[in-house]
Each structure stands twice: as C-alpha cells, then as structure tokens.
Image 1 (cartoon, one colour):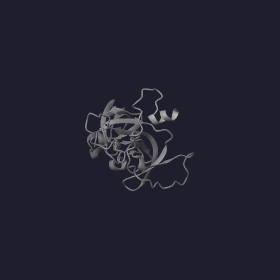
Image 2 (cartoon, one colour):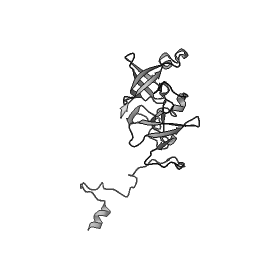
Image 3 (cartoon, rainbow, N blue to C red):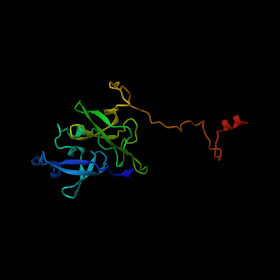
Image 4 (tube, rainbow, N blue to C red):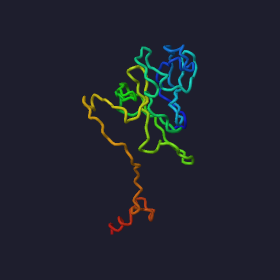
Length: 216
C-alpha cells in the first residue's frame, strides 16, 4: 500500500496535446507518445497519471485518464466522467493485476456498452487510524475499485466492478445471465460472539472451556 502515488506497469500511450497546454483547443487532434510511470490518488479528485513524454524527455504529472489514447486513429472520444465514474476515495492507494481477467465491457454513464481489454486495478483504503476517516474507502456498501481498461475506441477507462461484464472464451458462455444482485450492506466480522473465548488459557493449541470439558 502506497501513500498518494503508486508506480504503474510501463504502458505505452499517446497524450492528447491540448492537455499539455491547459486544454488549449489549438492543439486538439495532436498527440505525443509517452509511457505511464505512476498514478496519484487525491481524495475527491479524478485519478492523476504521471507520464514520461519520450519525445521531450519530460515527466508530466497530474493528467486525468481522458488525456490518453493508445492509438491515434481513435474512435469517438468519451468525456472524463464517462471514462471514470467515481472520484478517488482516499490518499492510500494500491495497484494490482487481477488474474484471469481479460476481455470485458462496461456500461457507461452515457447508457452504452464500451468494450476493451483489462490492464490493472487501482484501489484505496484508509490505513492511518490516527486520522479521522471521512470517506467510504473502507465502508463496504460504498467502496469502489478502479479497473483500468484499454478501450476499443482507443481510450482508457477506470470502472468499478459493478459496471463491468467480463468475457472468457473458456470460462463464460456466449449468453450471460443478467446480474440482479443487491449491494452488500454488511460489514462482515467474525469476533462477534462473546460466548466464544479462549482468553483464559495460554496453551498453543487453545480450546474454549466447553471444549476442555468435553475432552474429560
């Protein structure tokens, strides 16, 4: 778990040049190649990506996911709030690559399905128990992760699990069932039964008093 910044796998991208000039429309339609270096998580803001701009030898920070494409002959460009549905939940961040996942599609805010290939996942938590937790990163009903997807239209997206359908030629059928699950409203824990206690013993293979009585 990292604080604020986490390194990324070296993924080749193109940066939309208007983002390098404070959204100046004069640079729209122009691109420069780069490589993702890291991602930054600032609470209540979009994910920020740091990129090595190889033509310049420059390291450019704090660009949203909408600033990037993986091919310059892209299709219709989707806005940031479709590519990333939720802002970051906290400053504590981790990046993982989930096994098995590959082909997928997500249901966007524009009410359309967008296909692509899975890259990696970004997640948040609140690890500093000495500071007030003012977010939902560890509240099960509200927590979301960010699955980063290389979209067929040439962009990238960061979508939560409940907006993504996953495909696998070996594991999933052609016709999938429609998920109709409920949001988890529980915060599961196991140390909730006061009658079960082993605080009376220092034995390595501990037993409750009832278990000890049953051995006699």
